[in-house]
Length: 465
Ligand code: C5P
Ligand code: C5P
Image 1 (cartoon, rainbow, N blue to C red):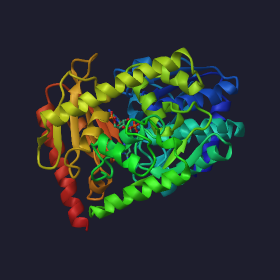
Image 2: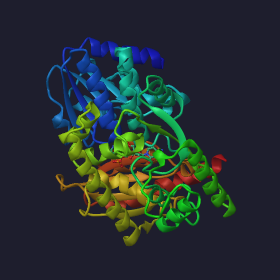
Image 3: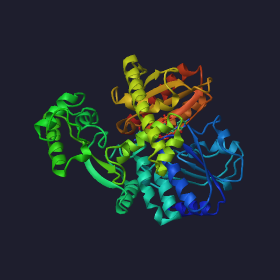
Image 4: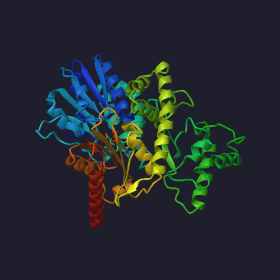
């Protein structure tokens, strides 16, 4: 069926439910998807019980209650239908809203899902929070206030990365939010921290693309901002969001000249950003990418419900806890990234790999992999492995790569599903970012097998051209 029909069917399933259990993922997209559906369903007077899991895997299945509520899976489920079937969960009690590659249930149970992967080009770059929003809007057109959370989920899942802005249906959602006054769409320098970080810090952190003479050099960035009249003194603390449109243009043109003068491409130097005018200025809630980091900080550190409370509008006690989580998250991520770079990755030929043991929690392995990769060989996927604190017999695996590597034939989801099953584990995700759990002890053989599979994909990609 088509997308519109499937969204209508999802809304109908919800309307017919007496009560719902919402099972979601602990990252920004999972928390925002949950918060969207939870609010939309509660507004209908249907009671909702949220359950957050780090992933649907055999050990976390026990958190799904064995009752007669409708089980709504957001940001997971499509790739784990085997587990639902094994647990005896019937098709008529399930609704899946997902964007991961779907893997059918082996016994043939047909769980109904609205999955961005099913409807073609315009939908592929739309995360679970996008699907959740469209279902919420179908339930009640007054739910447009939730567009903001949808954009947070999409940006948090990097849906805006390749095109330097959201595209297709996810872009339509951002416009829908702009039309109702909840979102302000602005183009500007492609940096992180536009609402909270002093501009010179923001610029010195730029890494995609690098700004010659500025990246990694906050003092030089401050001197430049003084020279072009944006800072009064090097100790100024203005943030990008405070600049007038004339100042923004002046800054962008000076930086673009600097990149081009160094013989580099300024492609990707300007991106589209999504601001939330009804949030307090200079807080992480003012734009989608910083908001997403805050949700990740809560979820990845076992407090998804604090993130959920922030999405529901708490700006008191829970918000202060979220701020605390964010500070902690940032410092540990920075540490993990430095650890990977300083320890060094093992080059297996087609992939680069590292085992971080029990130094860092498994829930941040993927974030560390993504951030470290920008400082490593971006032509080869990275694989990070680590222990799982509450499951000593398991190893968590996270892989990340870049679009340019996908264009050479690589598909990390396919690689990890194959290698994990062969080693007695399970994997899933996307072509660009995938994860798996494997039994402890098989790491050496597993990484070699992953390397072999990626090597095969590179070779097949070469032949196709
Ligand atoms: O569960 P899930 O879909 O939420 O995880 C998506 C992961 O994939 C995120 O960690 C995100 O950073 C990563 N990703 C990426 N580049 C993309 C799309 C997703 O690194 N283009
Ligand atoms: O955990 P990590 O951030 O590396 O996950 C990358 C992607 O792979 C996410 O979209 C996640 O939902 C997915 N994944 C999965 N099955 C696993 C582990 C991760 O589908 N066992």
